[in-house]
Image (cartoon, rainbow, N blue to C red):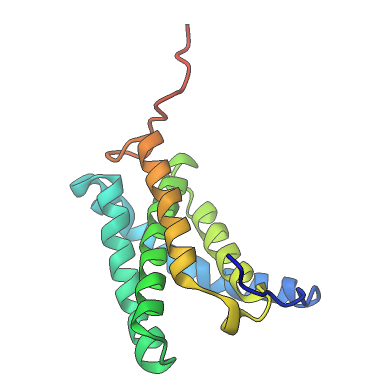
Length: 161
């Protein structure tokens, strides 16, 4: 895209610390989102809508920090919101397709956060509009391939003959 990127400076010794700290937070969040809320919301509205509903609540919860506290632009905040909703759809898909594993959801959430904070010069080079668009495309592909109602029926699976 023609944007200059700095040389990666990845603090390898910080990775285990980030992993543990973000894992504790991710387990707490996913215990609520996936362990408590996901199944009832999915049974009522279907898997895709559950992901969008929970992702929207998750995103709205963070808007105060993104926009009002960190003073990001409205465009930045909108991109981050889109990314957050799309990520929740992907987490719902992952949760369903791992036998409803809250641990799988927590590990994915953990690695999202670790990866984000290890990105070179996170604050000055991270663009959530681009990230949000890419993540939304992935969520659309997952929805198309596994179906919006359950996110569990892969359309191109070979039938057992």
